[in-house]
Amino acid sequence: MIAIVSSNSRERAAFAALCDGRDWPWAECDTVAALKKELRQNTPTVVLARHKLADGYSDDAIKLLATAGLLPAVYMIVLIEAGASHVLEARQVALGADYVHRDPVRSDVLLEYLARFRQLATASPAPVPRTGRREFSFAGARLDPTERTLRRGAKHAWLTPREVELAECLFDAQGQVVTYASLYHGVLGRRFRGDTSNMRVLLARLTGSFASLGLALRRHVDVIPKSGYRYRASARGARTFL
Image 1 (spheres, rainbow, N blue to C red):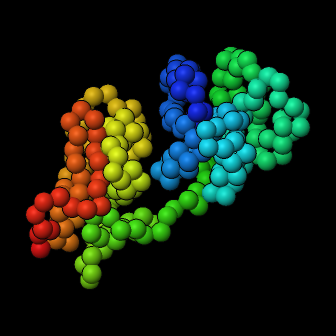
Image 2: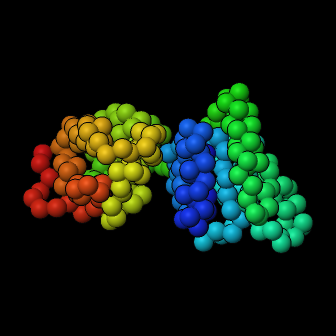
């Protein structure tokens, strides 16, 4: 997967179109914070990042990858302005960038670097990120992503990796709608094409895991028609069943 990190929506769309042309999976991140969230769910093969971002710089993105233990296995491409100093360019390389591309973006050159880095990454074992979070409170239970366990008092249930990923997606965006496009990419690793059945099945499975502990997950999760899911820490309506 190629992580596209840019605060310019048009630029992200243009790079996504380039990836689609080669049938490469991709993920859009508009900020460093969005990249951090993406790394909790997926490990990219290449990160393509604009130097100036809404909440920081590519320097922060490189440090994030380094802290997660993903460098040098994950390849880093940084895009800088045409008039940027050579000192800035050298700094990106020193931090861990594999290629620094100056504006204007030359799509043909960029595509070849992406292809090369993807091939090199495929030939090497995928790194194991050190971004796993500790257990957290979710819908009345304690969820441990590392052990994939759900606990309520003395009771516990084992979760599948995708159940954990769905719970994390909802928890990270609590109070906000997580779109089907985001859910399908982040949890199922593919593009959303209008059919929500796979996500309904996964939500039902996670709901069943909560039910085994005497908890009603659906009192915390709103299904927004044609949009996605929204998690609320406070349950709706009636009391949780036992």
